[in-house]
Amino acid sequence: MKEFACPDIGITVSRGVVDSFVAAFGAYKARGENVVARHVGAASLTAGPDAQFSLVKFLGAMSELQDQFGGPFMRKVGSFIFDKAVFPPGIDTIAKGLELVNTAYYMNHSEEAAGRIGGYKWLATGERSGRMVLDNPYPCAFDLGIIETISRRFESTAKVEHEPGSCRHDGQDTCVYRVEW
Image (cartoon, rainbow, N blue to C red; front, side, top):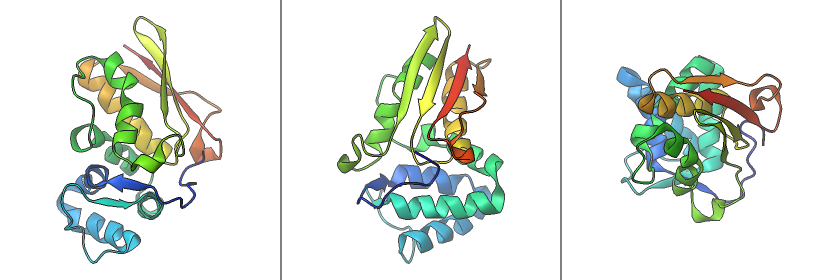
């Protein structure tokens, strides 16, 4: 699935994902909230922690801000996901964290999403390495921020590299990241 290419099939995204997006704005949080609120058709983002927002509309906000601020900003947004979005309990190693990214992905989207919005597939290639294959509609830089943050949370020297020739930002259907620690 290419970046931002998600059909409007009624799937929603959790408030935690939206909060991670807004948190990346730091002192300019109100700017991020205004852009997201405008795209999702809300006067403001004052909804409670269980709120859900249209995934397609949220991706529209992400696309606008990626156009304005670029990939490094989206990477920063992705770095907030592990702290703001819902993840399964018991993640205490890099391998477990990377194995459960797909589970967390679906925990943060409506039940209708199952199997319809791509995902994150972890494939161990060695005792301290693996590949993450992504085919979801989120921006490549955002996903890189997620994978780097989870990896370095458990292994500070973890190395995450994007494999050449596989990038949704460049129109491919998947991105592949190599992770070593």
